Structure formats: C-alpha cells, structure tokens
Length: 212
Image 1: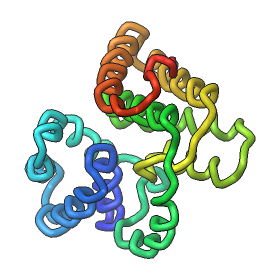
Image 2: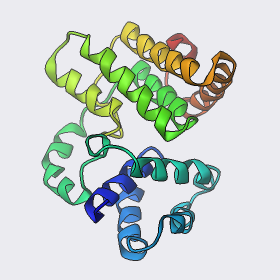
Image 3: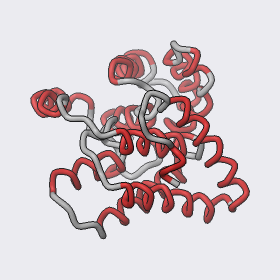
C-alpha cells in the first residue's frame, strides 16, 4: 500500500476507539514515527495511542482492527485525513444536530457489538446493514447520514430514526454474527455488548433492551 492508503487504513482502524481529539494526532504520530516501519512495529504505535485506562484494556482489539484495515479494499477506507480540512464547514453545520435517545442508544449498542468481533466480520456486518439500508425508503439526507455512519465514515449519528428500523439493524447484525460464529458465541457477545451499552448509555432515557 502507498502511504496515503496506509494512512487511511490507520484512520479507519482507530476510528471506533479514539475520540475526534485523539484520532488525528494518532495518525500524525504514525506518519511521523512508524510509516517507514514494518507491520510488527504497529504494536508499539498502538501502545503509544493507549493514553487512557479504557484504551489500554482494548489494546489487542485496536491492533487487530488496524491490521485488518490494512487488508480492506480502498472503497471501505475512510477518506484521507488531509482531505478532511475542507469538510470543516460541513462539520460546523452538523454540530447543532443530534439524534434522539433511542437512536443514540442504538449507536452505542451496535458499536459495542462491532468492537467485540474481528475486523473482517465487522466489515461483513457493516455491508449487510448497508444492503438493508438500500431497501429503505426515506428522505435523502437522513439516509445519507445513516449510510455514512454504518460504513464507519462518521463517528456520530446526527439524525433520528424509527424504532422498527433500528431494531431491524440490530437483528441483522446479530444474525450475521450467528452465521459467522454460531448462536452460542453470538449470544455471549451480544450479552457482553448489552452490558457495555447499559454502562455507556446510562445517561440516555431509553432502555437498551427495547432495541432487541
């Protein structure tokens, strides 16, 4: 991979784990100190990115996600960070928008489910949900926002969606996990994701179990 694609892969792999404030400095660190290093040096890079206790506990997942992103086709990678500066005006327009509590809880739960599985399966789940989205019929901007989020290109959802739609996405993600891992393992991972979502979404006035 050339450096632009590798930079995009680093961004894609780290996106689920790092905040907006942490992400671009991490990519800059990789480019400055690790871009010319072999793949096994990524473990040292990930270690430097784990500046919070919560990240240290996810160090293995982060490393697998970055290595997995290196193998993704170009169309599944996030845009190059250097190109994002031109999106500042768009980002500023969307900061005043926010999803309702049920949509926010959906985002927390689905993200928790994705972080518990390998990068290759993450991609399969995302593709399945994007195919499901293609069958829906609703207003264009809301569909585009959801599409970008499901593909992993945006960190947050800025619009709200129906409970039936959100439940169908969670169900489809669970079915994909069952097909790949078996129902026993999928149930275990779902239960773990639910516990994490209950903690992360404790401030929301919506129960995670209502998405099931």
